[in-house]
Image (cartoon, rainbow, N blue to C red; front, top):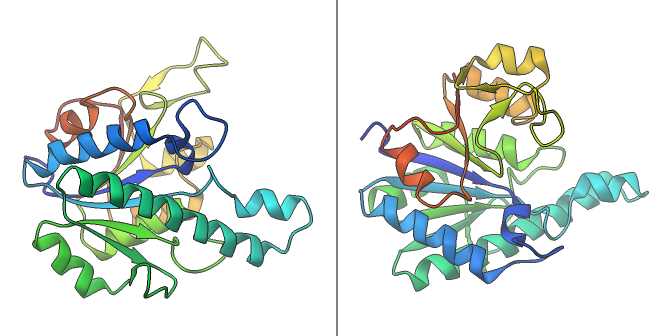
Length: 234
């Protein structure tokens, strides 16, 4: 197994399914099934979830809301999603812990790096909520940060396309897919993989990023086994 410890990054929008907002229980079950499959291969899993299906701080700021207030609301949205995923995973018999960047002891453990690593060593899936706990930082940056802190071997970013393209393949039929690409090329070409801060953090720590389509059943397991899935940034 090329990867023994991974950080899986999910967008909040991924939880919507075919809905316009909120959480689709069928999507939660699908994610739980895929995570269970890799846990059965003894892969240690950390998970970062966004909150865009409920609230996005940047969107609030464009409508006149204070950016810091909006970002804090977005962090709380990620915790709602984290709890939904925790429930879905535990219904599959997977031990989990939700760890929050904002202190919320009645709902989740506060994030402590050494405790997080210990949970992983004991086979628990960790769901990191509330981003970094700071405004102005996206959940992409939180994923890169937490992955670096727990010494994950890869950041696996689940999307709704099968990798990174030179342009949006849904709009440009001439768009070409990259099998591998460097961090620098991603930044220079302005490709919308993760935000620049997340890319820079992964580049500094030599942490590869795998962008793949998790809507295809079994893709996560294939990626963990080292099969050619999606696009590898590194």
